[in-house]
Image 1: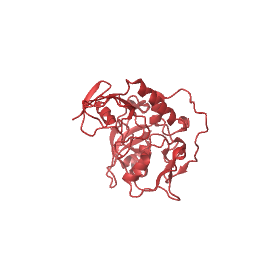
Image 2: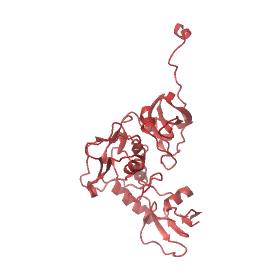
Image 3: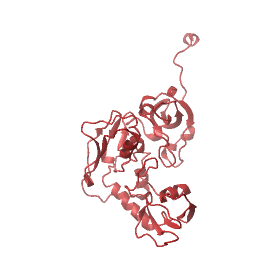
Image 4: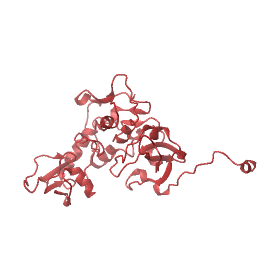
Amino acid sequence: MPKVTIDDISLEVPLGTTILQAARMIGQNVPPAMCYYSKLEGSGGKCRTCLVQVVAGSYKDPRPMPKLVASCRTTVMDGMEVRNTTSSEVQEARKGVTEFLLANHPLDCPVCDQAGECKLQDLSYEHGLSKSRYEFKRREFDRIDIGDKIQLHMNRCILCYRCTQVAEQLTPERVHGVLHRGEHSEISTMIEKAIDNDFSGNMIDVCPVGALTDKTFRFKSRVWFTKPVFAHRNCPGCEGKVTLWYQGSEVLRVTSRKDKWGEAESFICNSCRFDHKKTEDWVIEGPAKIDSHSVISQNHMKFELPVIQPLLTTENEQTA
């Protein structure tokens, strides 16, 4: 098993492990990732936010790599030494990448449903500039519905390609993708086509920004006012393990369960996501595990499971 050292922390990892995966195994000093998604084959290598500095290639060839490399695409070699948070060069490069991602991204966090769960918000907070140097006209697109439950706001898209990979790997027929090239690239559907397959809602979960949103949840509540609860049901289309987001006793939305890296533990079908928004449809397991650093954790410990009111009252209750 090759041995890698990341920011002076060493670990032996299986062959074929990337630097990003090794950092996640260590559990600290993990590079950010906007396009990499471990559940999607071929993801990564597009956003460049996970750049790291390799100061020693391996025991056999200890020379440093001449340029910063994408940690999600670079395989670990035995004796490799990597600098992430301890490298000023990496931090400056990450600030530059963040500035490019924000060049066309609108500052509409106060009205964006992704606020509070947005990876770009986190990246901007850690590496963004206080003022934009971009002086040109931003790209602007009209909002379009790419399905009866999904709205696409291309102004916010960072072209991470996650949604297209979901469609390629989870659905029998992909009807959307990236059109045009360069700064004119955009996510869109084929002519007069709508995305209506049974796993299309997973595009919402994998989107790191607010480009793809759930139309049934839009503008209903801020995410930090809702309470996430783990639940499951017997579903013929998927595993049926989800997170219910409550406000009071009402389920505002249903999403897949996320691991500590913000990735879906398992993809869920549209029936679970859109058609079952009542507590009685689910077996409640308990409050979801939320990172204490997340804004969603606000008042999370005070949450009480909703009580299902009986639909019918007894004759004594009616008399009283």
